[in-house]
Amino acid sequence: MSKVLVSDPIDQAGIDILTQVATVDVKTGLTPAELIEIIGEYDALMIRSGTRVTQEIIEAGTGLKIIGRAGVGVDNVDVPAATRRGIVVVNSPEGNTIAAAEHALAMMLSLSRHIPDANASVKSGEWDRKTFVGAEVYKKTLGVVGLGKIGSHVATVARAMGMKLLAYDPFISTERAEQLGCQLVEIDLLMQQADYITLHIPKTPETTHLINAKSLAKMKPTARIINCARGGIIDEAALAVAIKEGQIKGAALDVFESEPLGESDLRSLGKEIILTPHLGASTTEAQVNVAIDVAEQIRDVLLGLPARSAVNIPGFGPDVLEELKPYMQLAETLGNLVGQLAGGRVESLTVRLQGELASNKSQPLVVASLKGLLYQALRERVNYVNASIEAKERGIRVIETRDASARDYAGSLHLEATGTLGTHSVTGALLGDKEIHLTDVDGFPINVPPTKYMLFTLHRDMPGIIGKLGSLLGSFNVNIASMQVGRKIVRGDAVMALSIDDPLPDGILAEIVKVSGIRDAYTVTL
Ligand SMILES: NC(=O)c1ccc[n+]([C@@H]2O[C@H](COP(=O)([O-])OP(=O)(O)OC[C@H]3O[C@@H](n4cnc5c(N)ncnc54)[C@H](O)[C@@H]3O)[C@@H](O)[C@H]2O)c1
Ligand SMILES: O=C(O)[C@H](O)COP(=O)(O)O
Image (cartoon, protein in one colour):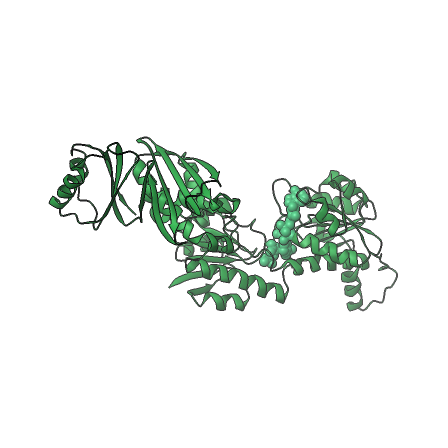
């Protein structure tokens, strides 16, 4: 049975799903060293933002197939390191959207009405109504930075509260912004005009310290900023100075450059600042959503099924995979076959997607072809996650072409591999929508289903050659299951494809090429 380690607090609904297929150990609060010590025992790791999954941990996780992040942000996972090791990284892109959006809105209202400090004041025995006079958000301008899932929900609710909306998101269309009632503007204008600014962007090299001393200086002295996205998007030291010096009115932060928040000037500020301990996703509903979403994906991957929200194999959603499933197998088989025909070191692979496969949706077939191509070298270590990266690291150039006009079959796939020993090509299609057939080898038309052990010869089409080859194989006790010759012209060059019951014994290939008329012979195990 597989083993799953859950290293952050996860809702029981997720654990229940995992226990259907695996032994589950819940061990929270592990130090990095403790995690490295035990991770080698596990097939899957389930985390929230509390576990940093570094390259060292990934390398120690020799049996890991999947890392599941019960939440959105995967910035605590070294995704490139996981990809290199063929480990799928999944998240729950939508499970906590509403929770995070509502937390940002709650922060905005709390900040405007000083709710945390007013509450603390009453609880300490005071009745102070003067200090806590607030401001309304109605008719104020909200600047939304990042108009993705969370930003969109914040915008929708804020609009219903009568706020005017500006948005900055270079990857969103003007139409989408307008649908949400937002005016799309540049960041500088948003910083200058907004009364409230709320951040809903990922932390990337471009967004790190996007809000810094210079941009804070552009804000109105009455403006407030809210960060429920990621720590480090705001320069905390600059923010503390801006609030202390009255350059801006206040801030509400749920996320920090370093978590848990240690010594910080932010703690010493008064009612102008609200700090929460990364609570954006901490609602009962969101925790159930993300736990189920991610546990289901871990379960599926452990059962050999695709994950629906893999962050390191884009385009491999279950719908696409379901549709392409028989073709994925075709692509892997052809990749494996052409790799063995080419032998030696493959330098380039051309993948031609033909007929109905010429659509953009077929991109996973290129990855499947590479997985097949690399199978002989890497065996089970190559998968859909790392096939492209492994090919790149081996210097294999991948050329992808599309030909929608090829109509011999509904869809067919043509692979050509060039390596140190020459160039070979294979074409394949599906018969009756699921049976794989080889329809061409090295430009010679054939029609055979691939089998586990095969022998291909390149020979002159002349009388007696089939008999000679049959006798030779018989003398080595090799049983032929089926045989087909493909030729373009009578008595010209031809290809013979034989299915054999067992692997060819050592030394027989050298004997085969001695048969007069046979120029080359290749044995293949699929
Ligand atoms: N506080 C929490 O507990 C909590 C909970 C959930 C999500 N989050 C965080 O909230 C953020 C947003 O999540 P989401 O689900 O809305 O993501 P999303 O991918 O749906 O949206 C992000 C948006 O940011 C935009 N964007 C990317 N780079 C940008 C840039 N340089 N400048 C401006 N816009 C840029 C994208 O175009 C996208 O529209 C993420 O950082 C996520 O990790 C925090
Ligand atoms: O990216 C996220 O989903 C949020 O930051 C939530 O993090 P959490 O799961 O640790 O609460």
